[in-house]
Image (cartoon, rainbow, N blue to C red):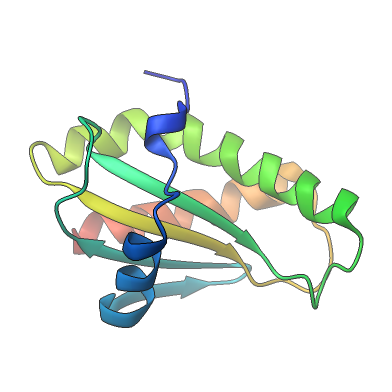
Length: 123
């Protein structure tokens, strides 16, 4: 349950386009922005997720990749509760890092936990 497999990552161009075109729900809490839409997607997974870090804010790929690794870890730690709350619904989800500088993991964890608690209240 604490893994993040390839089938859980959002890779389909059509689903990504659908998410950003019709994903009418978003939630922003610094330094994150969460966009989601409830839709059918291929595979058995309840959630497919996409992690985004702006190239404009982080020109060096090393920094972007580090933040994406941290985002994946934060999501992975919160995944069991997310799956428990969604039960049989299928959603696609985008987690974007909107900060302009790197933040320590403990601060990111606190902010991500607050964001997810708010998301659980909406879903």
